[in-house]
Length: 175
Image (cartoon, rainbow, N blue to C red; front, side, top):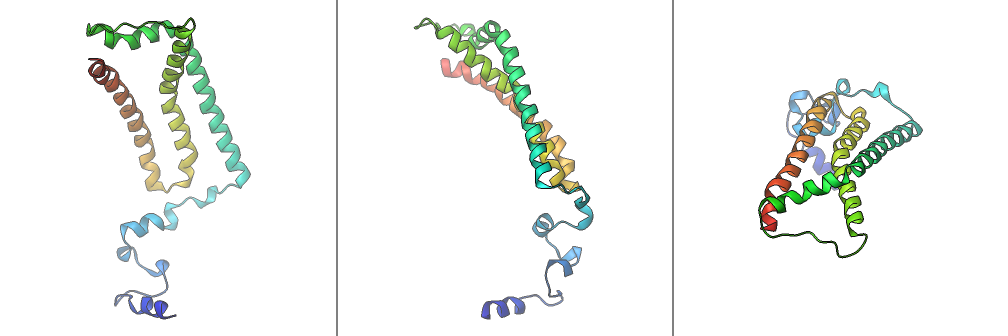
């Protein structure tokens, strides 16, 4: 009871008592606007039951999984080219690095691992897109405006980092 009275007395002069809804827009801070957006920013007319949310989540996961399987399958079709391309940083620098097979099935397993890794690299931006597509209805209008550029920027930065690791870090690590 004492802490409640202390909180009620701590309200600055000129601010109405009674909670967030009674504050004007000028009196709200950026954090409170984030956690308690205005009614016009929310699209509450798009509410769905839990079963529909789970169905939408399942469909998005299935689409992302199918795209991943297709991209891994396409990479399996080009496993020799992919393996050769991943060996290039060591071959171009003339560092004396030689790739050997120590077991009979080692080239096959390395090829499958390479195809899976490259297939996942290809499928990641689409999986990120599906996640954004699923989460977008829960966002406010101002948050939705940043989803597209964020997903695109994430994909560009992801591939830029992959290219940097392949072209700069791999030769440095092997040398």
